[in-house]
Amino acid sequence: MVLAWPLLVALAVAPLLGGRWSRLGDLRIRRPGVFYLAFALQVVAFPFSRLPWSTPDRAAVVLWLVSYGLLAVGAACNLRLPGVRLVVVGMLSNLAAILANGGHMPALPSALRAAGLHFEQSRNSTRLASPHLAWLVDRWATPHWVPLGNVYSVGDVVISAGAVVFAFAATGALAWLRLTPRPRRSPA
Image (cartoon, rainbow, N blue to C red; front, side, top):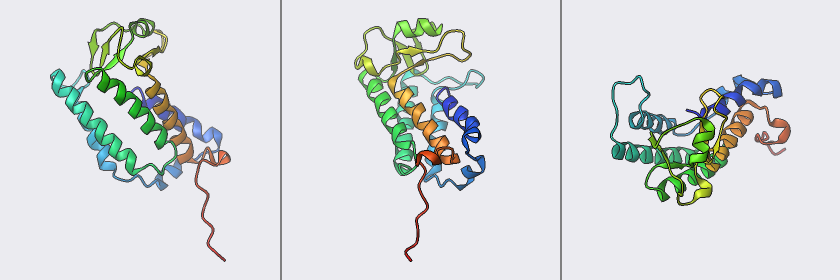
């Protein structure tokens, strides 16, 4: 959910940059059901605190990795949309760190301290001082005083950039940068 914030902020700012929310209705997202299923699996794997169940760690990791696979399939079906390629690169970066470290995204202790977070393992993250592929793990933090503060990886930053590009392009806010496709001219 934390990675949804850049998308939501970009959508809120888009009208100030000439974008129109009404253009979102023109989007043709291929295989949307794949995304719904992926997000449902993530909720089953890591339920919100108000939901009446908990999922054992190994089952949660398997469900999370399956959801990641489904998100990759959905992204592959939509590579033509601006920003999606960045999202895929970010996902692959995160997946490499996760798989190299036993199925959880490592978070550096210094990043956790900076964000005001204190855990050994929480949902899909684990505190790890010397992870494999250390340059890809959660290593940056929002300041602890920021509401919903968290730690972030290179992949998270790239995913967020892709989400911003997607939101601006989908609303037409980036038309002046030519990130939105030009209408095709019919031959005369």
